[in-house]
Image (cartoon, rainbow, N blue to C red; front, side, top):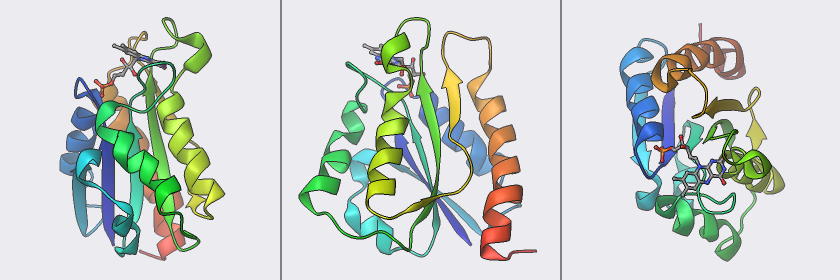
Length: 157
Ligand SMILES: Cc1cc2nc3c(=O)[nH]c(=O)nc-3n(C[C@H](O)[C@H](O)[C@H](O)COP(=O)(O)O)c2cc1C
């Protein structure tokens, strides 16, 4: 099974998490493909994979610049995504932006759910105002997510 991690980032924290996952979780899936969202379009959902949205939040609770075109393309080319299974890693800063905390990931989750995709597990949050080390906590969550949510769904032993 292939895991595609779609990364929305400006200062590369989300990319750091995705890269750490690709190194630390490669024993759990066949392939891990990390992609900057600026290179993604709606054809990505045709790939046989499970998807992980890993994105920061910018502006007034918006997706990062590198994710803007991809996010807009959901409305420009809407299609039913009932075959898609995904997880969400949502980054934000709760102390500085309490009203729009981690909205980037929440927006993707809302959009995917509206189009019929199925989220596996709960959204994982990372708060930049905490002491939690993003890469370490992200890898730990992802290993657990792959084991408890993805493997049973795809019947991988
Ligand atoms: C200009 C600016 C705007 C931001 N807006 C939000 C926001 O609305 N909500 C939120 O939760 N975090 C917000 N953040 C915090 C980032 O999402 C957070 O620091 C994240 O870890 C950055 O990830 P990245 O390094 O992958 O870009 C903002 C940060 C900056 C610099």
